[in-house]
Image 1 (cartoon, one colour):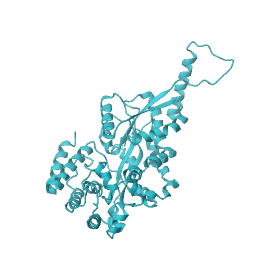
Image 2 (cartoon, rainbow, N blue to C red):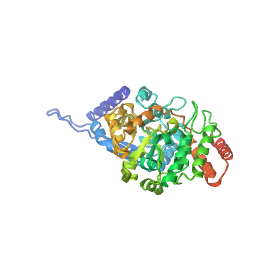
Image 3 (tube, rainbow, N blue to C red):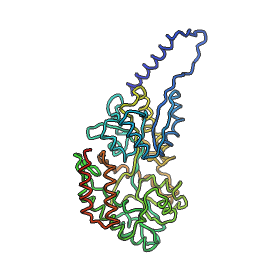
Image 4 (cartoon, helix red, strand yellow):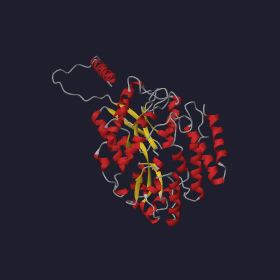
Length: 432
């Protein structure tokens, strides 16, 4: 930051000198402060709810930087990342700051479109210890480049309905001791209440492929871009997902669909594995009428996983003159404890900044969760999560795996063949 402080001072001096030599007579009789007419406008490209978080932070930002306006360009999640991909590849329409969701980070990390923030004048690596370790690592390439600054994380949690468990004669440990026990508990819940254990059998696969990774392994590829589909963790994930479907324990509804939200409202879905932020969404708009009936637990079998997370980045070919202020804005959004806490309180964006995880807010009971102090558990989960390397073909790999799992669930395709077919497709795509 010191380099940029000198840079900004030099710009101010240059502007002052140019105004003094512009031919306008100096007014020396009554020295008065004249408001600056030079205004910088930063463009921030974001998606819901990052756009709202940025918008809410603007009054505090303007108090610090009255001569720097911020223009927010907001698109839906997929549209936003498609637009950013196009902008980076063509170097046209680049924002000064772009928000990135972790699921899309891989496709950007493999290219050269983003600024390496680990080197001068940014020196982001100096601040590494201020962030949750796995979140910072997610934005770090194997060569040590840091391409984005984490702003929020999604520590995984198992949300469950206490009323449905009680009717089935179950307790929390019946869900969390083992994955097989979790499925067995679902059988009892279905028999006693008619409710499904989960929304979709894919949910089981999504969490299990994130467990048991060896150091250096990515979710779908190893460090040499070799697919990891023919491994025990994928086999177990597919087998347990198939067990869920065969015993009719999933509602067969996809997240964020109307049937998904209705399942929560009507008590038709007993549990949901997701990021901790889901508790806030259930409370505010998905199923507020179910307040007090939910609780949060750590994931079964001692697993810890991340669901989501957001970052801010700077395009390498963005406007060089605005990059210092763009990075100042990113620091304001990610390293300012007040702003991080405000985003958590307003949008359930769990802070990636460690200093923002020590507030008394974490000790408050959550009425929606029956007075449970669940934020403590979410903080503990965040401390145990470990990052895995991202790959530019991760999104494609997820589509392939989902397709093959659907063939297993809906058409009875055998698991070894399904995984072998997925492995073959990923081998063809890995180095593109």
